[in-house]
Image (tube, rainbow, N blue to C red; front, top):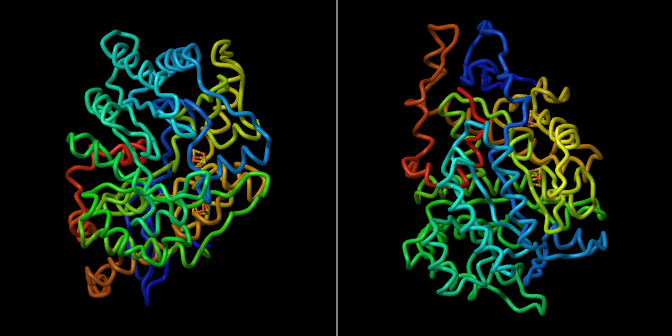
Amino acid sequence: MSRTILIENDKAYLDENSGDLIFYRDKKPVTGLIQTPNKLHEINIYNLKLILTDYCNFSCKYCFIEKSIDYMKHSRNMMPWSIAKAGIDLFCDLSFATDYTPKMINLYGGEPLLNKEILKKSVKYIRDIEKTNKINSKIEIVLDTNGSLIDEEIASFLVEHDIVTIVSVDGNRLIHNKVRTYKDGKGTFDDVISGYEKIKNKNGKVVVSCVLSPYNSDNIEYIITYFRYYLNATSVGLNMLHPIHGVNKLPFADSNAKLFQTYKKAYLTAKEKGVYIEHIMRRIRPIVEGRIRYKDCPSYGWRIVIDPSGRISPCEAFFSCGKYTINDVKKYSKAKFKSLFTQWARRYPFELPSCNDCCSNTICGGGCAYNAYVLYGSIMKVDKRTCFVCQELLKWIIKEIYDKLKIKDKLSNKNYYIPTPDEKTFLYGKIPMDNINLSPLYHYSAFCEVK
Ligand code: SF4
Ligand code: SF4
């Protein structure tokens, strides 16, 4: 893989120093030295994921946590209050020095609403802490839920406490019910949408998260349109499938080439209908704005995850196998924490030798460490599926810019040309960029972008 992308008789690359997209014809322009911000090597905790339970009332066909737990014979638990409180307190201590705002706490599972009383107690405790000097910023509370257990009382609670809810929906009733089912195989769609609408009807903050799989990829244009007009969703996550630990492969998945085509179609639909799709815009927005996106996941030095039994890890996917976890939140060891999290903080392309010559190394952020570990044996290997999609997306977007801005003509009397952010904003179409600060999905992404 070369850093330079060939387009007709011209060339383009994303500059590792400035983040700029630079087109040239003959001689590569000389730019400054690479200046990776030092703080990227440091641990800067701004996000806590509290796994309130690893039980779930669904049995989705692709769930890597559920299937890995079954494989590893990992025992399931409900998080008790003593661990939830210790986790929140530790997060306040660890994140105090981090200047990124807002700080963010995800209430996660399994299905977190199965542990409703601890969830509510945790929320009240967090909101009380905000009024003290234990934390120095607003805390965005995000609930990641399957949506089925949201009744009127919970919906009112979420709105009253200003919680952003992410509900997993994989398509319309027919598509969603093929893959997201209860344990007895019954479809979950009606219960999920009922929960989603209860929050919407109270003007609460709720966004949609969808997993791309062979069950919905052929209909992706329809699904994005459906989210926009039937669910009134303007912020959507479009996740890739994770492999299952123990089985060490993707459970079922489209080819890499088809996955790229699906993301491309989703983006073109989103651009026309006005939907912000985080997993695509985290690549396109840095290209437009000329920003470098160093890390793809907050787990690389910015997040702690605490499981129901009190273990700590940078990434929730490793609890089922016990790798990259330390005990325990009530007997926190600074030395053990530093040793584990420093290793993860250095997992990004500018530290991975195989990324040196890659065209995408200023926008990919290194993909998923868990995918790399399960499929290639180490978190320091690259996540080849994300690599492929990212590289293909970049080449396609650069060609779009080249054609639309008539770069070929511009290079007839200049050695190189750097389009301005304004020139590149045509890539946004009707996507609602003014409101992205409201999106928790945006905060996941923007935490490690540098101009
Ligand atoms: S992780 Fe993959 S896409 Fe990213 S820089 Fe490395 S090789 Fe390129
Ligand atoms: S490393 Fe992968 S599985 Fe772990 S939190 Fe990040 S994206 Fe998710």
